[in-house]
Image 1 (cartoon, rainbow, N blue to C red):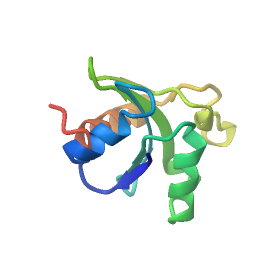
Image 2: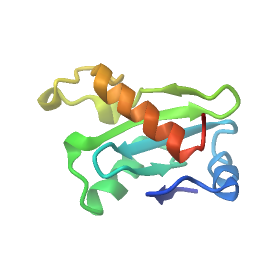
Image 3: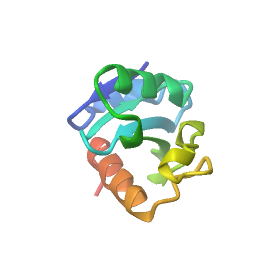
Image 4: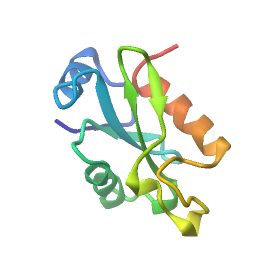
Length: 111
């Protein structure tokens, strides 16, 4: 089940998000509008939701979180964007990684 929110996910939402892959949840975050779409099978599904709601491609990044270890990753095919100087699956900008991490912690209520 995909949830999209501007505010932290509730415990109930997080349990629903975990249904797809267990403790791992795929996320797509608009780092400017501070909105997260999570729980999709493939990142492009969350990307589509955000783009259709007015996000700009250059602000939308994909990754995920392991809710058992709280490890955040920055890997997604939607991140391959030469026009944004990102030539790999992983987010290459340290500033974007920092923002993506902070927002992931916010949406999943992590310290």
